[in-house]
Amino acid sequence: MSWFESLVLGLVQGLTEFLPISSSAHLRLTAAFADWPDPGAAFTAITQIGTEAAVLIYFRRDIARIVSAWFRSLTGRRAGAGRDHDAMMGWLVIVGSLPIGVLGLLLKDAIAGPFRDLRLIATTLVVMGVVLGVADRLAARDATGGRHRAVRTRKGLTELGVKDGLIFGFCQAIALVPGVSRSGATISGGLLLGYTREAAARYSFLLAVPAVLASGLFELKDAGDGHTAWGPTLFATLVAFVMGYAVIAWFMRFISSKSFMPFVIYRILLGLLLFALVGAGVLAPHAGELSS
Image (cartoon, rainbow, N blue to C red; front, side, top):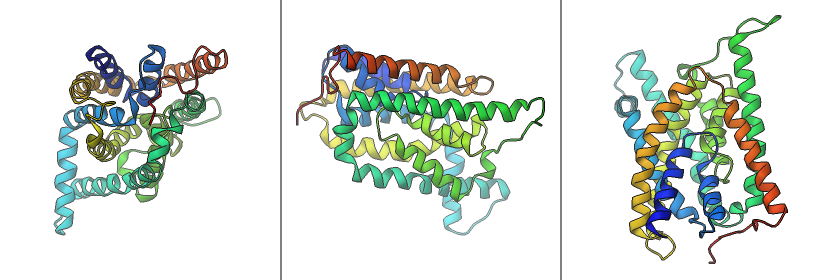
């Protein structure tokens, strides 16, 4: 991988990680369109450490409060209702991380191989785009009501329990398939469960921290193997961190008042374009994939 490739892929990773459009799909597609080798699952996992570092900094106060309260809960110390909720959030992040941890290990070979087929990516882009659109429409209807409907109050994170935490976790695990989108799947799940856009997005980002960091650290052993060179990979990770921080700040402001429909439309159009290109023979389903 050249330094220019690592710059472009780092920018793509940082730009798409937190938007509900799938960073892993965009890394795969960028390489395919540019006729570069597929950067691979290891490169994707390692560069995600950069974007998760952006989450740690952006939500540093929330994370510090949750971690502190969680450790207090281990000793049986209580510090008021707010602290109790923070401690519960710590446990819910752990519980919600279990599905992707288990499935990530069981499906490791598929993630690195068959799941990177461009036809599957096109399918997940379209299908999950429709799911996000439906979920967003339901959220908008609750917020505005209608001629024969009253406005319905949606849930915040204070109402999150173990059952919903696990459902969020299984939604996140679906994103092991490129094209699904970690944030898209968890936010869609949260909206369908009745949570606000802000609550679903915030828990989605917090839930991703342990899973992404664990995956990236696990894949570090493959850096420098010839496919995932140390220098360009670390450079791409730094670029992804800077871009990712800017995107988080923008995205959290955006969803406070705007719909997810622009992302829905983009996903569907990109998926259909990809189907057309593969069907016409312009792109091979396994274009650029690395041989084992």
